[in-house]
Length: 401
Image (cartoon, rainbow, N blue to C red):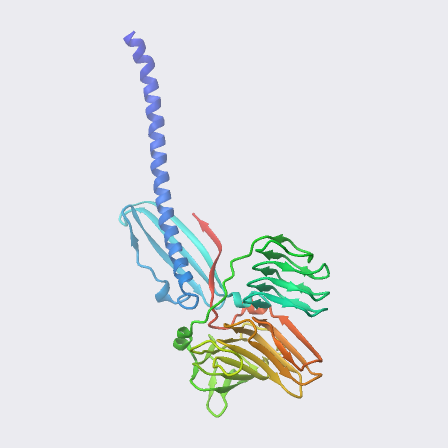
């Protein structure tokens, strides 16, 4: 019996020992891989933590992106990166190692492509609050975003070329047509005709805020009193009554500290004009206004579209105004007003026409320009944004091996 037991039990015991050994080695290997992957993932997550805390700086700077070799009890991680400020991307390669530097046992690599994008170039119209459209037979190009209810009482209103995003309810008749997708967070979208898909949620869109300390540290030209800036087709800008400045290849930031800036001319380069103010105000007398008092367009054949070497933005704390008498008015670029929902205005002569190619972030009160008003989205601003816009990091691709 003892011999029989040995002949039966010994092979079974050896079999179970082999299986347990295989499972143990597999568990150990899986633990090493998970630990190495976690170390690599932690390095990439640290970048997104950094980017979420700063919408302006450190996206492409070597000093801000560099990381020391990070050691843990079971291993360490290293990071290499390739920043591309022209295409607004960052390629990150994070290596997680289980073991020691002298004796690495398991290595996992995570490669990620990060795209930096500003909400200020994603929509043709952005409104920081509820908005009502009373005009009939009008068309809105590009995306449309409201941080509140959107009410359309006009007939034959059409939204083309982008999603409509409503943080609240949408109200409108069937003659209101959305030629694209609708995102709304409320309980109703009215009788609006939606040719795309309807989603009862909204994408992550945060109303931008202006960091004037960033502009104060990165300006090409700074004004502390009201100035008029004229852009020249030669890649320069002139301060009226002052000097002429070249627009650097990486772009120019013209910063007005607690004052108003008046602009016009032919933009040849990447330019952002910022009018800061210490306090919130209105279009009447407060500082922090950008005033366009004549045509402002891009150099070259595509004078209404941004390109690799030309884009424009006007960022104002309190107000943006467009004005010209006795003639039509053409303006291009991004026009963002941080405060209020009615601090954007247009004034001119009866019978004249106003064209805007770009982005506006408030409804525009109008005086004159009865010959027509045309608001057109410039999709090229997504690919060729002006410098100094607040950005957020988007993970567009990743691969682990």
